[in-house]
Length: 75
Ligand SMILES: [Zn+2]
Image 1: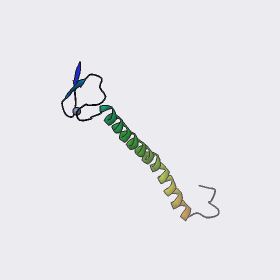
Image 2: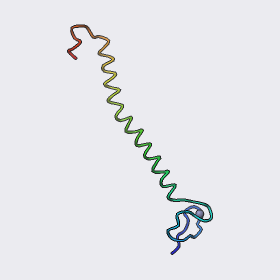
Image 3: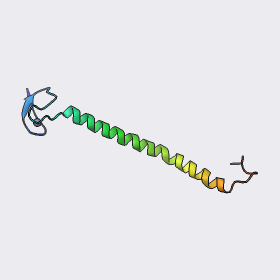
Image 4: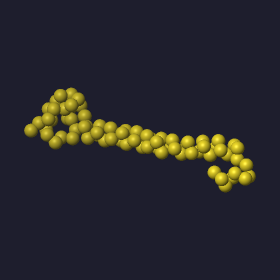
């Protein structure tokens, strides 16, 4: 069985991890893609977690401006 390289269309043995002509490695590009998606997911999750934290911080910041001694523990 032979497979065709997705990049240069050269035939290679089935199960070959690297194209003998153009050095194309689907495994590697898959892993690079996975790493990129993983980083995007990581950044996005940090942002999603960060939004309520930032709102909470902003709320505390705004409330802190009008804070008096009497209302200090009333928040
Ligand atoms: Zn190739």
